[in-house]
Image (tube, rainbow, N blue to C red; front, side, top):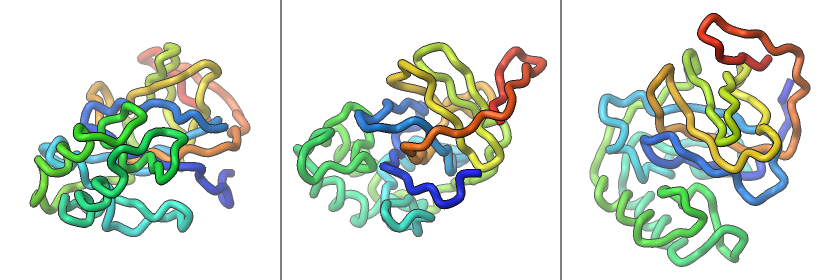
Length: 187
């Protein structure tokens, strides 16, 4: 369904699962992976070193917080959303600016290795600030509801750190089915 789409940007934020919707023309997201580490907060700042599935966004976590991460975040210091040299992946503490909070998270976790991530999206759902609670399709895609400015990614009832890609395209929605617990699954 979404093969061939190119993401506009990506974000990987904190263990609290919170993200803002970028001030770009984005209409859908893909939850690509989430941190299933026993202590996910130790992977805050793991932004680079892995192999991205999208060539236009080379930043991808590798399970280690090291110089690759800290130097890169430091190189973005002082940038802000929409400004020169901006990169959403460097906004570790999601507030639309790269500052000491972002660098400190990575620096405080410097030396952490062997972080665990998974692409198994069973139980993953996204709660938007507009009230919608949406499960992604089998590939991790879902549409951003009109008016939404932020969201939190959950695994069952627990907020989780995730890597999310943002796309300009809107998914064609096939059906919405109520689930026993009252949540909505979007196909």
